[in-house]
Length: 252
Image 1 (cartoon, rainbow, N blue to C red):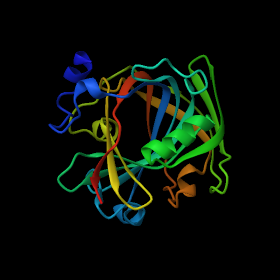
Image 2: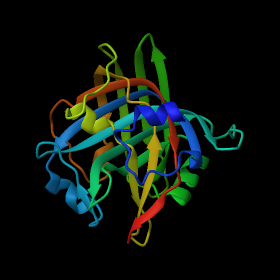
Image 3: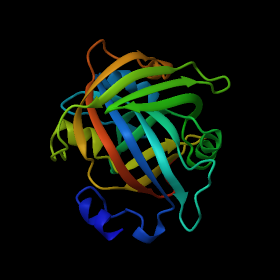
């Protein structure tokens, strides 16, 4: 844990939970960051009032992020075979609480494992949805399909092919790539409007430029967001190991 902390010490705040209290670890792989700039005014009604929409040079950004989750386990417990690995795709933006730590706000998280969906909705107050999903790889190209099946949820689908197109690099502080990806906490709200913060730790992202053919993408639309009719900013990451803490209430 010490090496991971040292790699990210510039990103962590003094209120980071103690290193020996992480509760879950997991590996994210074959990940695509697809980002679009949007007006902050578009997102403002969709974010709790105690959180500010974070912007980079005046623009807010919405990300659609498909990847594969594996090696999922709770601390001091053996992995559950039924929830150890599955596909996941999230729709996200970036927020800043007053006087707090910049982080991620999820509009939706689709996953191909029903037990993981139910557990995350209950324990972490996150808007997870059941989805029929598949990831296959041919050479370096990732083929990814997702179709939301959650009961009474808005329909949402994703169909795309993507692959890395450049050398691995680490983003530099002050760049858009760093602002979009180097986020070390998430925010969530319960049914009463209370806001919770969950911290994570991992090495800096091993980013690569990427190419993609997104044949179908209604994930953001299902959250009430119309993405601009422009090509997204694309980044790829082959794999990263993550440790996470339980949520803690910070507002409301």
